[in-house]
Amino acid sequence: MGNHSDFPIIDISRISDPAQQISIAKAITSASAQWGFLLLKGHPIPAKDINEVMLMGTEFFALTEDQKAPWPVNGKYIGYSAALSDRHKDDKMSMWFGGVPGDLKQDSEALPPYWRERAAKVEKFKHTCYELVIQLLQCFAIALDLSDRNFFAKAHPENAGNGNSLRMLMYPARTEPSKGTRMSPHTDSDSVTLLFQDSAGLEVESPTGEWVKAPCIDSHILVNLGDSLCFWSGGQLKATKHRVTFEGVPHDRARQTMAYFGRAAPDTVLEPIGDRANIGRYNTNGIDVYPGITVGEYGRLIMEQIYGTTLHKVERQA
Image (cartoon, rainbow, N blue to C red; front, top):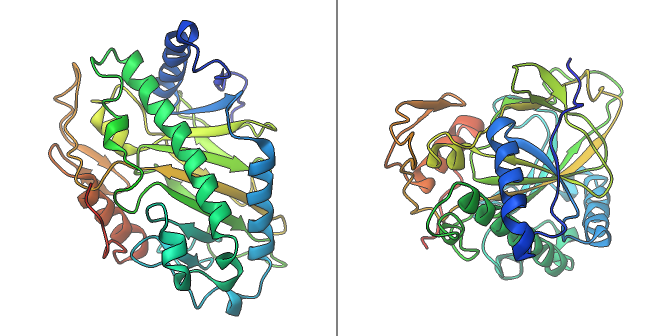
């Protein structure tokens, strides 16, 4: 296992300052091109908001399975997924909050009862995460010297599709080792992921091909890019494999995280840009991504690959 002494940490506290935006955008994009991962320091999401939502997750995952399992993930990416329930048998529970703004209230019956009076707080937190993702997408366009700084951002409306999803994760402590995995090696499929974590445990494939432990620093957000944005950028940005192992998070130790997945509208057509627009065959997680595929089509393939089915029964267009 390698060390993370050169893992990129970027201070974005002045990201809205026109005098600093270009240099911050270049630093974020350079880290994303080399590592596909970075830590954000000085981000705008208040610690109290993160802690409040994390605490709600802690309380929810402590409930019995019969208080969670009857509300499985539906076509809007809302619901609960039990540990060891995917094809990889990953030993983690997850609570999904997908859909567009207002869906958690409108479809409250899809939520386990614990969340029905807390949905407004989750919606607010999702929106805060969305705003940060839009800022990062603008940074990529600036640093890649695109004529429109909103080139990527405008393809990520908050009110389209079932992406832009907050997912709470709990790696439970067990008295005996599980026969599954903690989290299988994979790359994310969407555009940008924000990860909030209560402890270290995630391992990232470094630029040299070694597995290294991603740092966990208080008040920092771990960011990584997904295959959609990597392919769309013509390979100028990087989607990096990551995993959680039982060596990093032993069976008798719990770990809790929250991941916000920023995803383009389902009708967005992925055509590689830039000098490497002839990126050709792009295979990831066992799936071929090809020029002209839409984000919605790619999302369906991913869900079938991981869960053996598709949850995109209610996919909205932009």
